[in-house]
Image (cartoon, rainbow, N blue to C red):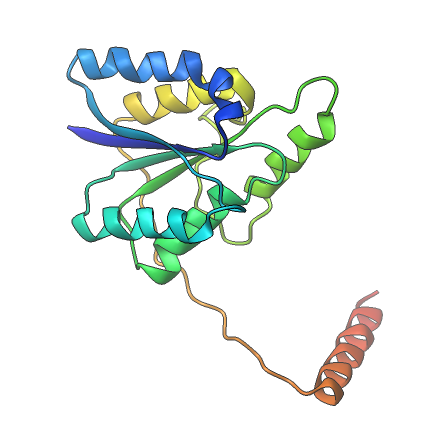
Length: 188
């Protein structure tokens, strides 16, 4: 049985989760999935708590799908995915990302949340259904929950290559920047 957990960045996101949580409840009643829990945990205000939660679960290999959503600058989804892959070496848990809607009065918040998921280099986060429609807002969260329940075979996660950390002096950084600017100018 597929084991699903949900993490959202704020209780203010809960109203956008209602329909999707009901999808999960009904799927659980039908014996299709086990919903382990629904966490509210702000990455910006409790980074260690979020990472500790992932670490504890990963050690037991109990979560098949994390549905992770936040609004505004949604760093929660990408950070959780990166931590699972790069720090824990997890290639079994699928992360489904949801961008919560900022409403008509704050469309820039919705756009920021979408870009925070879709523009992460090398991301393996599932952030749209097979029809290409992104998981955004209340309907997107509902579709993400349906995807987590009904997708017969979860995608294969590849262990990504890490990028090395480069420590430079100020002079070395200036030289590297000048070389990069020159290389970019030569391309055009």
